[in-house]
Image (cartoon, rainbow, N blue to C red):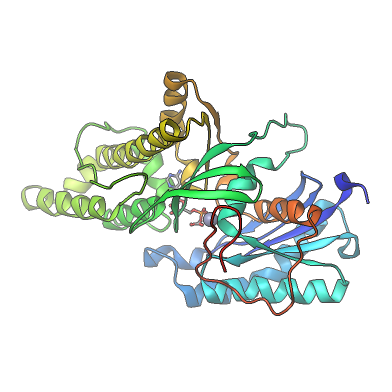
Length: 349
Ligand code: KG4
Ligand code: ZN
């Protein structure tokens, strides 16, 4: 079989997006994401509602992905699925569907770690665009609603977590701040948009005192809450009148924490190829700050296209593709893993 023609269907349902994508080799043929509006008013994802919405969306999303790719089910060479980490009920929907499809088509099943997939999203080739993935080794700052990690990537499946958050994830901090501002979920993109017209030095937030390459964001959320509580005492319209400055200052602090740690990681490892991944990689402040550091420290940086930053199945399919080449197939008795860590060379069971 010609490696470039291997067709992988990826399925992703770990949180609140129902996603399916098809790749031919490393090239993207389709990438479909169905978001879930149902969580908007809750300030976060409601697991029970998420799994029900996945159940409704999964069949049409996969059908559309195949249609857009211009291929029939029978032409798929393997089905790749997200095994974890994520919400149990959500993962179960994608996994059960993938197992059924794989059995029905008599094509292999491939399990994928969602966090590794975020990193390997850098290897997706978009048709008509230049293909310049990172070479090994590189550092990846994976920042999403559930995770904040600095990973040393030595090879496709040889990754080492050098640091991670001890409490909230960076995206979670954005979302919690947005909730305090009574903005709908997910608040990260809204804070980003409003920060654009604000002054990042208007308010100052403490820098968490965390050793090494680990992170902590929960204290930041608390100081944001107190700033607003105190501000409202003298000015009931405090949030309304300062919304842009509040967003810009909060974003500035999160970005400076992230960039500071990735700079330390680069110094410690000597690696100057820096990638970012995950939903928060869509943040314009982070992208800009990273570019500035790249100029300052002579880094080569890799910032994924927006569609590969937030949760998507193209990243599951590309990871599945590299496993397909290694003939790493899954068993049908596999179960979801809500927590799914990876160590230096292998995924930890
Ligand atoms: O990777 P992702 O889609 O899902 C998880 O695996 O968590 O990341 C979603 C997170 C949410 O917390 C969302 O608020 C955040 O990414 N996010 C952003 C931006 N776009 C998405 N945060 C800051 N600025 C953005 N532009
Ligand atoms: Zn994610």
